[in-house]
Amino acid sequence: MVLIYILLAIFIFTVHISTAVSSTVIALLTAAVIFRYFKYKEIPKIDKKITCVFAVYFVFQIIIAILSLDPKISIGEVAGEFYRILLLFFAMIFIKDFKQLKIILITFLIASLLNDLAGLYQSLVLLERPQGLTHWPTMFASVLLMQIPVQIFIASLSSLPKWSRILAGISAALSIVCLILSQTRGAWLAFLAVLVIFILINKNYRNAALKLFSVILIGFMLISVRVPSLTDRFVSMSDANSATIKERLLMWESATNIFKDYPLHGIGQEMFNKMYNTKYILPDAKERPSATNKGHDHPHNNFMKFLCEGGILGALSFLILHGYFAQRLYALYRQERTMMTFSAGLTAFLIFLGIHLEGLTETNIVLAPIMREYWFLIGVFLIAGNIITNQKTK
Image (cartoon, rainbow, N blue to C red; front, side, top):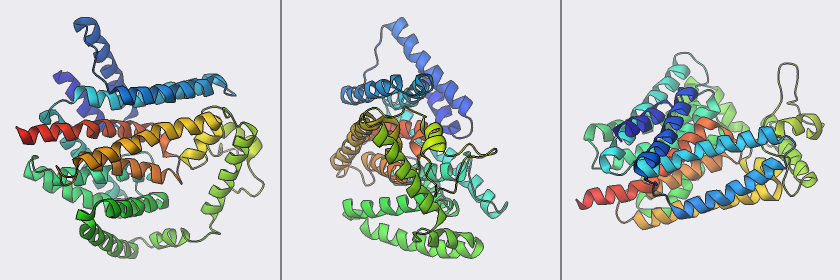
């Protein structure tokens, strides 16, 4: 069992540094579950409701893949998604007490701090748009949207060592600075929307959240002096004639046209690139495939991707899966809010909101490192509330 906790810690530390290492860890964890079954006849206890929701989701996804324009590619994508979602179950199966949870949280904290420092170095020293330890700036921004709630949770958890809580507070501040420096407008809007929702649902933190908003605004203006392009990126968000907004609207129109032609089961997973760039790209679109550019792989919107690639079945499966987790995480927050200042349920709900609100302008849901970390963190915080409550009772 000790080996399993080490593997979980290695995963959360390397998820953005090395896809190969994190993939190997998932394979070893899967092998551990199989080994324990054959040696001890031990079947892991899993959440039946979550299992049923995933079963429905994957039945729909398999049907879509079989009817795809290229079933081989689509089935491979479904298998990859299943592989990523295993991390939610591994977290819920193997993390059972506060000591184990503490190891995961502190490992995550160290990894997130290194990510922040890498981003700051890239931006302030190398004078380039930061990507941290990830592969590109938009992915970096998505990771930061998940990091910040976890860092605040660690900083507020009195049962953790004082040094880790102080470090978490510092890291949260650095993550917000990195989010500004990332120049990722979709992530900026998502973060502000999460902050507004947080203020609306949690009256105990309203004053603190409003102060944080003021500090972020001042910080943005100060950082803009050092990085003038930030102002241009910010102004462009309100310009309906900007190239980025126009291009996204055209892609969404094309995605809608694909849905109209394939309404029931869509064109199949990972088929957007093939159909959009050869048949459905509109005449006004500027970002077109070329000898050096294969064109867009996705419509820059999570729901639109499921709609055009999966039709009605895809849209329904998307709403069932993520609608269930929205309800489940919010209910967990409501249940825990009298027991913890910044609860596990609230942390998971804010992670959920950050990823899916950014997903209105970016297709972040198909990026393996992001979704591996996302599902793992959701699993961790689904069980963290009970673990912390039991620790306090003891």
